[in-house]
Image (cartoon, rainbow, N blue to C red):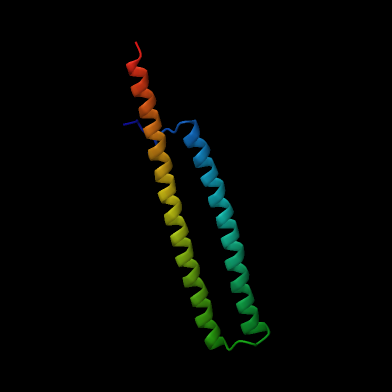
Length: 108
């Protein structure tokens, strides 16, 4: 088992650091796309409800709640998958480090 740093994050090998960095970039891009999409949909609904008066405000309230709920479910699912990938990256990195230590201990 490897020792963890002060924040509880395990030390990663080079491959693990690259994979974690790629996952972090992917997560940031997702958050940006998600926020822009969700914000645009909510803004359009509000304009259609109050400025254009195309959607009845009583119905529009349910639409806003529905959009927020769907967004919350999508966000939860994506973050859950990314956390599992992060745990897999850490586990694979620890396994590679352990294999290197075992190989090093076998050599005279």
